[in-house]
Image 1 (tube, rainbow, N blue to C red):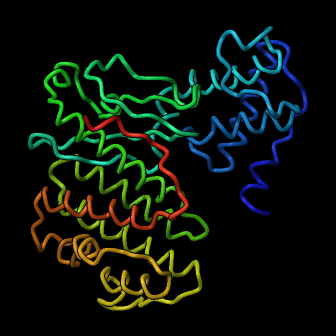
Image 2: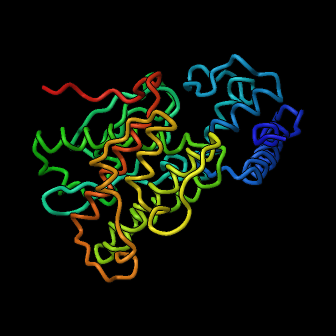
Length: 319
């Protein structure tokens, strides 16, 4: 049985007519989604889909505006309540990118952009006013997102000082990061991909720690190695497993170009690669070197982006 089959195997046929029945349905549904291994950020849309499927509500707006909802617990109102339930119970955990954030350097200080999970398309803008968060994700098409509100721990006082050029740079980082993480999150059908996503999360934590650059550097390399090996293995291709050849990211990248037709940059592959001496603290690593490897890894993900994918985030005008 596939993961999708397990996910769709939620059994519920009672259309709630009051809050008690609704809570019972949602607790059953959320437990089912958790059992299927979905993170809170992955459950909202799947919950709406399953409720629609089980109760015969397909074709209705799953994110209705207040004036569209109708009578309490009517079909459209019920779907709105599903969204409200996840928003109220999980709050910000609904919107965190499943692969974590991306790190960028602004005025010599490292900042983390915690990118959202998105459904549909979005239009990006940059407003120094952090109270302006844009439209709720998925409620309107396209959604609008204020890039500054996704910078972790950014204060209003500091945001007020951003220049127009810095705002454009933040938006550019946001768009490139979303493209890269969309690719990373889409990789399935091999266990190495999940391990790689974990490595990248650890690398981001270490980068932001400021005292663990060698850890960040090593985990970034581990992520790239496992992604490329996973891609090769998924298509039935072998790769070196012993000695230095098994960890040579440049050589693995060449193999991916030959066997999979991926146009991976030799420069970015070399920038991500590092020796085992980094892991054991025998080779010093600066914060900037770790950040350069982080950036190169994101570029490699974007180079894996299928040609048929369209951009889901529209950046603001450059002027």
